[in-house]
Every structure is written in structure tokens, then in C-alpha cells.
Image (cartoon, rainbow, N blue to C red; front, top):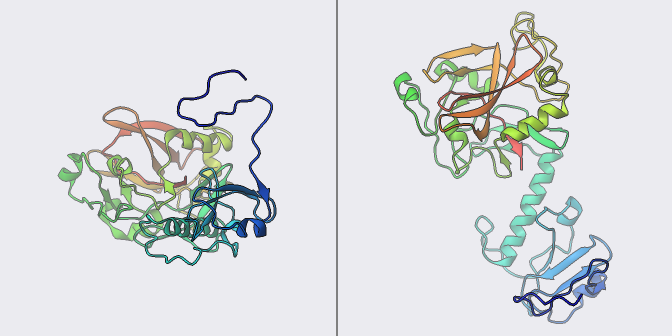
Length: 321
């Protein structure tokens, strides 16, 4: 187009109505390339079509599908052609060699698809199992978190003493009433400092939802005035049909989110509202002392949004990256 080329480029092609054609060939033709240079790029036309590049060496090629940062589909993961080209797999936990990185990418992709399909469960670092549900464009855990360690294995302190809880400025968890009988159903209660810790609370590939991600969920279900009915588990404690106190107004769990009234631990360390109210943290800070959360009530169908003291203990859900 007559403009000067970029200083960092040997070749700078510019156009607003045309593109650049990379060599196109079948999988068999790609595999037949003799000593392909590292970084060689071609476009495969047949099965699992897409851009492939050699991440190995000319003598030991390792063809990888370019995915643009998006994990390949399950069909690509299971392709017979996805191999290490005869190279030894040494370390997929912390890969540095191309064949190790490729293997880890495919294993992670396969696990993600199997979890999403419900074939294998989602597990946290402690081995706790969680169901998942797709709601609109999002995927959420169906149960509250029960994990006691960060994703890197570091323990999250279990703080029971009231004076200690009041003075916290770092991550901690507790059970409601400091009683483990509540964990299986309601999960643990966490202060916001653990939610915001860079070591991460949710399993790999998942995270604590930000305020805007909670808003996306609520908007998809009709807005804050009515979304609670579609999020709360149905039934009442009094009737023996559920865990919410009566009347559990409007609850039908249409979304499959199965919100439960796990109560809370206040910033003064007191426990409140089991079976009446459910609180869930977002990862979004409001002020140096407060962060956003969502609340649902036994006697309403709305979802409230509040900024509360970071020392409070609330339930936590995870959302898929």
C-alpha cells in the first residue's frame, strides 16, 4: 500500500482486502516433508484442518496445531497423529521441552472436555469432587468450595478463635459454628483475603467469579429482581424437602445452580443465618476494607449485591476460565 514497513519485520505485507496464503496440503503430505525446519508453518486441509507448525527439530519433528490460545477440540486431542515423534516424555508437570509441553496441553484439554461432559468429576487439590453446570455462556460448580489448601498446595489456615478471626488480614476458613458436620452440605466459609490470594483457591482452569461474572449470571436469568428463584435449591427445611427455611419463596432451581443457605461468619466472628441466607464472595474489591458479594434469601426471589467487610466468612463458588 506504499507505506513504510515495520522496522522489526523482514517482510511486511499490508492489505485491507486480501490475505497471505500459507502452503496448503493434506496430513499425509505434511508428514512427508523431509527434515522440516523448526517453526515451519503449513495449513492442513483434511482431518483436524488448521495451521500446523513444527515445534520440534528437523531431525525429530513435532507437529503442533495452532489454537490461538484456545484448547483444541476433543477430536484433535484424540488424533492418532498427536505423538511425541519418538521423543522421550520427561516432565509434564512442569514442562520445558516441546514434547512435554505438547503432551501436557493435550492431557489438560482431554481432562477439561471429560469434566465438561460429566465423564470425570472436577476435583480440588484436596480431592473433593464437584459437579458442574452450564448456565448461558458460563460453567459453574454446583457445590460450595470445601478445599483447605491453595492450588499450589499451601494450607489455608483454619481459624476458629473469635479474636483471631476479627484481626485477620490474610486468608482463612472455618466451618459454620466451627463444626465439621456442616462441610459436606454447605462447604467451608472463607474470608475475602483467601479469595484474593494469587495462590488461587479453585482448581486449575477455574477461578472465583469476579463481580461482573456474577452480574452476567444474574442478567442471563432475568435480572436481580427474579434470578434468585432460578438459583436457589427448591423445598424447605420444615417440610423435609429442602434446606432453606420456609417459605423459600419462589425457589425452583431452574438453572441447576443449587444455591444453599450456608449462612455466614461476621467480621465480629459471630455466626448467623444458616438455612435463611446464602452469601457468596466475588473476587472484586470495593474498597481497601470491603469487597463485592451476592446474597440470596429464604423469603425472596431476588439476588442482592453488597459490599461487605473482607473479614466476613462467606461461601465460595468457582467458575470456569
